[in-house]
Image 1 (spheres, helix red, strand yellow):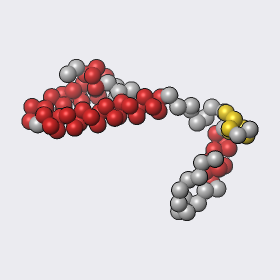
Image 2 (cartoon, one colour; image 1 turned 30 degrees about the vertical axis):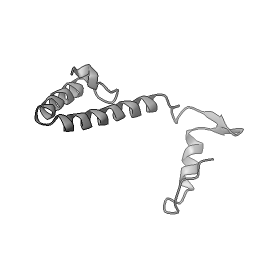
Image 3 (tube, one colour; image 1 turned 90 degrees about the vertical axis):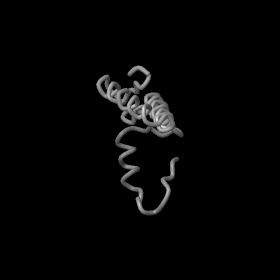
Image 4 (cartoon, one colour; image 1 turned 180 degrees about the vertical axis):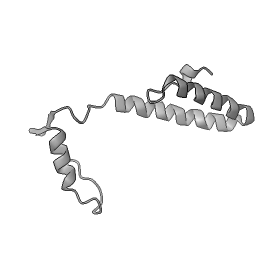
Length: 90
């Protein structure tokens, strides 16, 4: 498989080539392990694509009629008790 097949936006060209070499070595010893790793790489690619589609946190927006920006996010996160349980998103 070519380095392009492993390309994920979080990996540069050299890292992709290294992954290709590592995958070849793994596949030569265990095709099952190589398939598992290929699945994980596919998940990494999907996660990277999902994150690329998200609005940057620093870009202002409005939600529920309220202005939201970097400072309102910081203010909200500072008021949350990190030990109290789940983060309530509103």
